[in-house]
Amino acid sequence: MVDRANRPSALSTPAAAAPGAQVDIVGTGANSKVIATLPSGESVEVLLYGATVTSWKSNGGKTENLWLSEKAAVDGSKPVRGGIPVVFPVFGPPPKSGHPTSSLPQHGFARNSRWEFLGKSTSEDALDSTSVKLDFGLYSSGLTEDTRKAWPLDFGLQYSVTLAKDSLQTIVNVRNEGDKSFEFQFLLHTYLRIKDISKIAINGLLGVEYIDKVLNASTHQQKDESVTITGEVDRVYASIPQDTTSVVEAGKPRFDVVRDNLSDTVVWNPWTEKAAAMGDFAPNEGFKEMVCVEVGTVKGWQKLEKGEVFEGGQTIKSIL
Image (tube, rainbow, N blue to C red):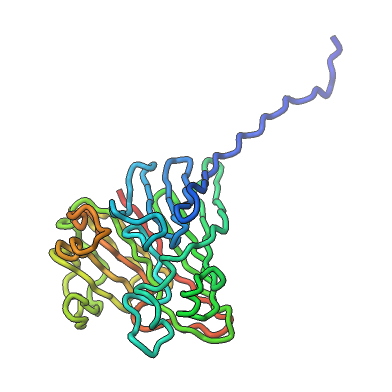
């Protein structure tokens, strides 16, 4: 046999591509939703009606972090009770008269309008797909005729929902696409799933002034280190200096809610009577397994001039 000086080297086998996040659109019409699942099992579901996040599972897909009413309407007939509804351009009942939002329903129109799914993007490392971002859009042209009459202003909303192994980020981008300035409020009405409301403490609000809607919208200051829930709670904490509000359950950290360019947080639990009065709230004792920690800009109004953009949102970290 001839000994060749330059033998061909063995061909190296290319490494298999890292598994990517799976994104599916399921359902039709008002029931359509986008489901994203990481290779490690974490998942998020976003209903196109309202761009409402209805499920977020961490811990390899074993732990549901959001509370969704058993009677929640997910057919586009009304806003969803639970998950993360998007509140825009007004929070709560609109001003009675003299304001551009006065003709809108409570919490505005974003949560009961059909959004467009704009696509996905992923972040990958050598071993795994570590996150997936889903983008949704709502524009003036996509509103109903009645809504356009009630709020005849030109705008664009882009909502980005980013799922990672232990966190969910939800960011809204608001653009003024018209010739006139407009004012708005914005809130992410997040329903966090917990095991026992009597064992919950909400930290990070010490010293902050709040409006207590249960006590005739009177103003108070948070004097205790922790907010605990022993009855109906509906408070608007404004101009919070620190970015993180933490939810502790039975003495152990459960959630960190980190605000991004937002100054306010609403803490809400309907308790017995108010839960019973809501036809889409179920089970009746469901208030014991949820607490709303809602980031937003709702004390006063944000103003956008022609061509200006506002962006804000949150990152929720699930701690187990």
